[in-house]
Image (cartoon, rainbow, N blue to C red; front, side):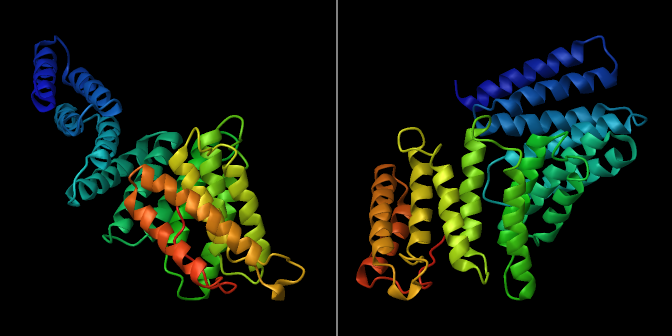
Length: 333
């Protein structure tokens, strides 16, 4: 039996059970929502997500008109399911934004502060995804994250706070830096990564810690600043922190991403910070060695686009020891 037909049988059985249940429409809506949540949280196939979307919509239709808050809560879950539905077109993500915006209107009036903040955080993710697809500007995502931070502070909600700071930073860095305000946004991105790292620790959240340190390194490496060399050495420290977790044994592809980023950084730093005019042949040689290691990992794992990018960087560095500041390939996450 195919995954699609299996999911349909399960959903049809669930719908029949709900229909036969001696329960109010409100209770039936709750049952459908819980079934949809089960499909959404552990999908075995994209069809499970589409079935969850359908069940959420059926649940909303059952909610009595005088229970607007209940409908808004289901609508917010529907939005997150739409976010997860795979597809090349933009219809699902556009529908997700509409559903979340509609839900927030009711949650703002009747929901708890935490519910509102969670919805704003998810709205930010939706808007950031749409910006990445070229469908919307990034500013609405930043605004939604900032609204969520009014509730999700460092003390009471450290996990959510760290996620929001990371998302804010990546949103800042995605904006075009065509004017002086670009420098401010870069600085805000660095600050946001550093804020997240005040609550995420190597011991308690190692994967998140490594991701943030890698991203902080990238931000420091490319920030427009009069302290470029100083920032570069700070970036190296951040990459080394990430590599405490992103090891070749445990996380080979993430390890390759980070050593490639570290190599890019090293290639633009002087061998002797006290005498930058002496050049950086040692750093360039070390960078090439790291890039070759990263390329080998990407090739072995079939990550062709990254293997190609690293190969081009190796060619550039090997052909002429890159002039200070002339080498700036894309960072890897």
